[in-house]
Image (tube, rainbow, N blue to C red; front, top):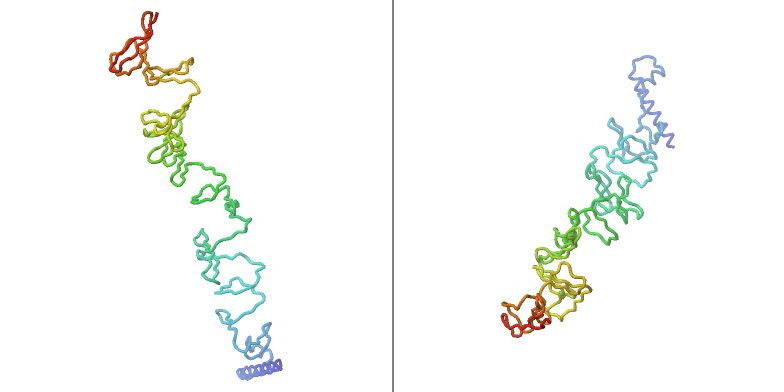
Length: 352
């Protein structure tokens, strides 16, 4: 049997050892204690005992598998149930075990560039420390739909919201906005500008000259106020202004202030005034509908007030000069009967 063979080998080796001790000892009586003291520790090496069990170690190998030197222990393959150690240095670990109790992974020296690497398929996936204060991930990070990114315990980004503490951004493109509050100046596509310093809005101009300015083709149209009591609609830099409907101007104001109602290339327009009309009058007479401070031309004929008939100027037949100082024995006025400069004038309307 294997056990009896081991015993035979051990006894044989023990006999050889005892004989060598006796041969090496001066001729004297040896006691058992002297013999036991002469046997060196570990005097029965494992290569002398095949398949033996020595103090909890069972050797069933057929060749050398374990080497012990002053530098350490070298083994081809180790299978353990429980391993406890202060420091383990390995090149590669392969495991499918479940870690039920495990402390944090700690990188103590040369920590930059270290982290988690996945090399199983394709390129190496990384989650590593890129610099002393920044992590790098080579892949997307996908959170659960109800989770969010937080800073100092405050949510800053979720699937549907930016956190209330996010006050600065360099957004280049956004989708549909429901509400927008902006503090400070604004530039939209380098075309619409709001200047928070002057509180002015410019479309097509960075420097609006009114509360609202629209610039196109070098002309700036302004809507604003002249002062605290008057509003303003007009143009900047002495440009003409048209008020149009259907692309047709109906009210035109020249750079010098001349105003034209209607359009000469269209049918005459109707102008209705619901109220009093005054011409060159600072304070219109409330008792009249038309108050004119000067000559008028009515149905193609001039009507003017003067003290006598004209001595200069061009007039047409039918022009009338009303006597500016009528009195008994004088005429109401004079009428031009022959066109000319000044033409022929005849009195009419004798005052009795």
